[in-house]
Length: 148
Image (cartoon, rainbow, N blue to C red):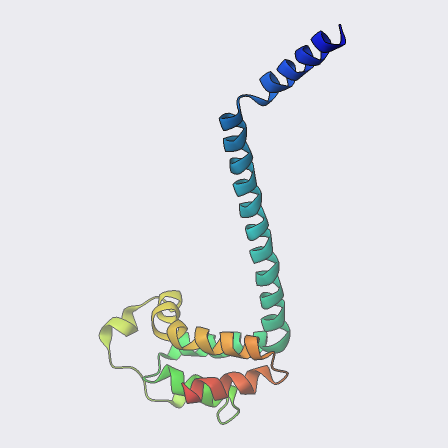
């Protein structure tokens, strides 16, 4: 009787689990899904930490400068950003800088202008400042822009 009960329980557990291949496939899928959820959660935590660092250390300065750049469309935005962030020029001096003469650039919407003309230079400099963990983030951002 004990042997029959053991066999019945063993067969029932196999039926609940499915055959070995199905069980392994579902375990692999569950593991993959769990890994994806963990990666998304890790990315969200790291990006929140970065946003907080940028906001605390340079948010106002960067917003003000980017706003002026989008309005004025200077010919050399990268150099001008470097000068403003390093303290050599004030954001209001962006207005007196030579303007871009490219008609296509002048037609761009502000967000599109910043994405196409400014982001390629600004993003690597922001990454460098963040990775270095700078305490003088704005001036180090200016130095990074002036170097690169």
